[in-house]
Image (cartoon, rainbow, N blue to C red; front, side, top):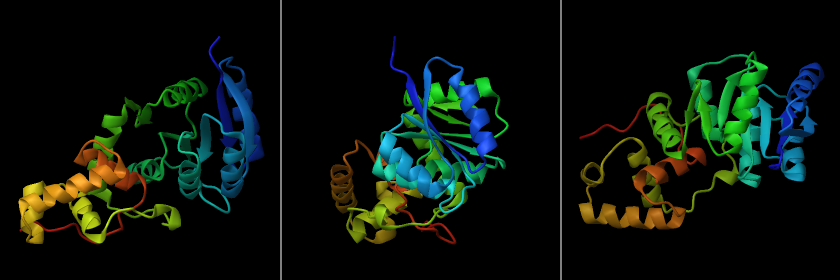
Length: 234
């Protein structure tokens, strides 16, 4: 028999936690190994128990679900997070994925659907808006949503330090805005080859294969600040 999927439930309402535990525990491939009632406790429990999946309410005391998710993913990137909310809106979904969530659902999700989502994210997939996405799919979605909603939405902290030089970060932000290398060169007044050299350095430092992966990496690690307006193209 395959290993069970280890799950931690995070919600500040004990009755909801108990109900969710009862539902999930009835499935033989799920093992509910812990619970937490606030964001700080969620981070501690996740580090201590190392579950496969954390089912996390977005509205939590002490640390909210976005902040707790980012800390969990920073400390234990192999843990996947499903975020539940009473208010399902597109911008909130975007900020949840930026914080590191692999799935986002309204709290009135059916028990069978939630079990399916737990199984899907435990296999490395993402579930957004009812659609199942792979790593490339979530990257494309995240870049598209960034261009709609911008960079802010959760508190940045020391865990969001970028190992790039100021110029490399500037170029990467322009990539995220959708500019080609040629457009970046014109915008910054530098040669096309210089931009290519910087991109090579960026890919090497981040350990990714292409500019899209680099852009998604930066978004998911909170390196892109909120801007009132996007860059204007010349």
